[in-house]
Amino acid sequence: MMTSPTSHLSSPVPGPQSPVPGPQSPIRILMLAPTPYFADRGCHVRIYEEARALIDLGCQVQIVTYHIGRDMPGIPTARIPRIPWYRRLTAGPSWQKPLLDLLLFFKALSVARSCHPQIIHAHLHEGAFIGILLKTLLRIPLIMDFQGSLTVECRDHGFFRQGSFLDRIFGAIERHINNRVDAFITSSSAGAELLVQQWQVPSQKVTAVIDGVDTNHFHPYSRSEARQMFSLPDGVPLVVYLGVLNSYQGVDLFLSSMQILRKKGCSVHFLLMGYPEEQYRQKADEMGMAHCVTFTGKVDYAEAARFLSAGDVAISPKLSLTEANGKLFNYMACGLPTVVFDTPVNREILGEGGVYAVYGDAEDFATKIEALLTDPVRRADLSRIGVEKAENEHSWRSRGAMITTIYHKLLQR
Image 1 (spheres, rainbow, N blue to C red):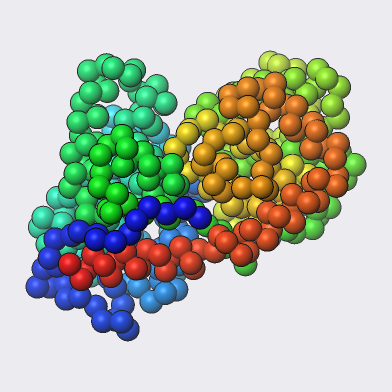
Image 2 (cartoon, rainbow, N blue to C red):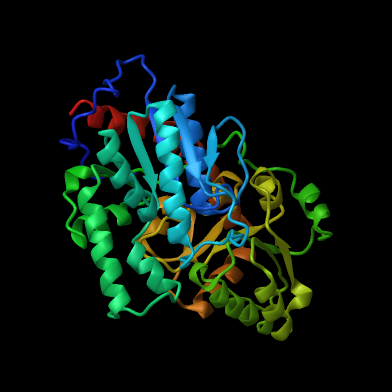
């Protein structure tokens, strides 16, 4: 696992209400999640697994988040007041979010008065912006959980065009946020390099803490039992996908790969697990492929491993060059050989256990899937490699220990 330097982390001196904890003292963490947590998608999985790992290591974690989503067991969660017209669970920017983030600031300030945090751990740039205001009032350090550039994400979601007035405004805001954060953890080494090289963040403030997986929960289940839930016969090769369904995740491109495979006469069924699915259900029908693809809609995180176990091959056509790709850890832990595009993030996670298609090439993606489906020996080898890597290299407990080390360094400044 690649990490950037962790020495010489700088931070404000903790305020008088936040003494530096001793080796056995629990660290009190205010975790800001400006998102409808928990909604069974990648960013939320990282928040949940991080919080759980930190609690297991003796930290006291308080999450503050939006009014929608569901509480996860064992993790204290406070929510902003209910906003009746905002029900969106999917990822991406929205002009309504500034109001929610204003409410999140006041809710977090109220919670902080009762839990007396020593660290603010902010997810996403919106969380870091709120964290900057809070750290000034509370006189405690701010760490940002960086999962990608805010400006690039807005471009990728079609929120504005590169070089536009809004693009420049958001870039200036992002630069200001980056300059005020005391330490960063990133979900990939590519994200760490982006902060240092493009945004000129000092490398000593940045640590790559890539996603992990809970192998007690994610492991292979009975293949036949999983297939029975979807009325799929054992003899049909099955390609599975788990995650948000949108063009940002490469799903449109994957539909083209599906069509290529069907035209080549490849006998295969596709199981697409995620939401929002109606648009892609309609597209599959228009492409004449409704008979060979099953859409499940949103899958509960607690059931994801069982559902994944139905597959022979997993895919992730995500196109981002810097954002994390957390679903790959779950695929590996479930013993699924995985086809992805050739990006630094995917190679960092899968290593020799991945199958890499030419970036953005739907035809090559289809070719790699077909080759894997017809090669049971290679599938077995990749399955073994994936499970071993998940168990030996990617535990959330080790990730939590890295984060607590950063906390301690911040509090000792």
